[in-house]
Length: 261
Image (cartoon, rainbow, N blue to C red; front, top):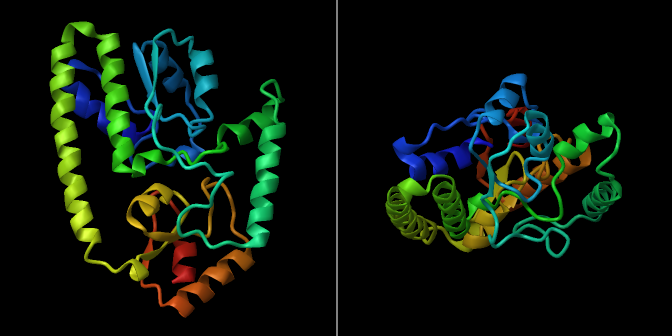
């Protein structure tokens, strides 16, 4: 469905698969709208890999309109996910006003009906549920993704089972090496200094795993718009805590981050 899953699937599938990624590397899955070409592509597919956790709100309609009859793999199935109604993201500044807004947004989502009119469907297609969907930002969860996608490839193409299994073992070894390298790098930064400003709240899992404190003007969905009060609060926090690290994603407008910095 999007580039991260495309990368994992390509590593596992190698030259045994013909891969198409719907949302490319420099596109934003939050605002993505399927095209007629995507409908045709999915109609011919043997397998589709999605993240799940309400990340691709548009996928069900795309499957229905394409008449997709293949295998559906939910990469995040079994992952250790962050429950949004039970806890805030690690590093998220508690703010009564923001919590009220999130509660209202959550209530709107709960009250939605799957048979609602088309003008409401577009909103729901890009609305996340009760769990943080960005689970791939945890390497422990990436192992879950790898296992799920590998199993899906084997189910869809059992003749190449040994090939997919060998690629899985090799890929998991790469993840182990990366995890060791990352842990060593992070250990050089005192926990008190692991504070980062980002463009939208997508890195809760990385924060959870490595005690980073990520602060963002925009929530889980890039379609959300920060209030002037939210931005002002972040600017005060950057100055008061002398936060030095600010990052903007390549698919995001960098003007807001520049304003905060």
